[in-house]
Length: 379
Figure (cartoon, helix red, strand yellow):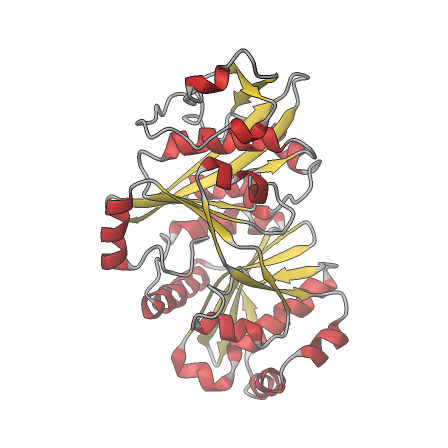
């Protein structure tokens, strides 16, 4: 069965110019949610060299096979992540693909629309679109189709690249997206001794202090465990004033991702009390720091850094190559989680993020009320 039945109404052929620079941003018309709206008429000039492509809904098997063949595949572009979001209240997942003349997928894109508040939603794309080498034109076509689909019901779309070589860097601006700086840190996992030596002295002392406090790592196994994790994440989001997704997201991720070895849910337990919690995703040799929270009452025991270090050791034992800290805010701006991550002395990377605003006035109002766009980002 298709992963996103409403994404594309059947199959159709359209000709797009081989010169991908001529493929402009989506039109401002109200999108038709039953079909992918064709590009503007100017793209059908007979004088242009053209490539025939086909927009489809990839099946789960097609998408799974495709992402194993292309560079920069990541957990957020998998059919398992689509299934997770489709089981989550307040989310609308979508998967799109482009078929080339030989009948094979040339590009794919997984996105999710998050409802931040009543009548307030945005679309998030992490690590996508994906495409075969030298198929950036297909990725641009796909991103345009995506924007035509979501722009009527979202305030903005945002792309978070997960590497510096993704095709999003080449195609986003031509589709109306604006780049802004966005920092991240990567922690290599192959040499634990070397990584321990790179930790700041404060981090090393904190980890040792937590060990002496008797903290225990506990995997989330029961509903009560999951409720405790969600509770501490919700309180952390409330203190930080950033959106928190519906609890069904974590139940779905536990059922879909964790059962396939693609996620781990852990608690830092001190005497039966939950001091900190973390959700890590795992795919293709990369650990992704997805959600985290802690109880301020236990901050002096330094359970947060201890929990990260325990997961670093776990990833190393599994043969993982790197831990992706999931973003550290805008460079130069004060942001607590960024300072926490910086002190692990990982590799700083600035791959940016790309935003296309669909309804500027509505977004300005939403920002003034909820600080949505200025927040730390969504998953």
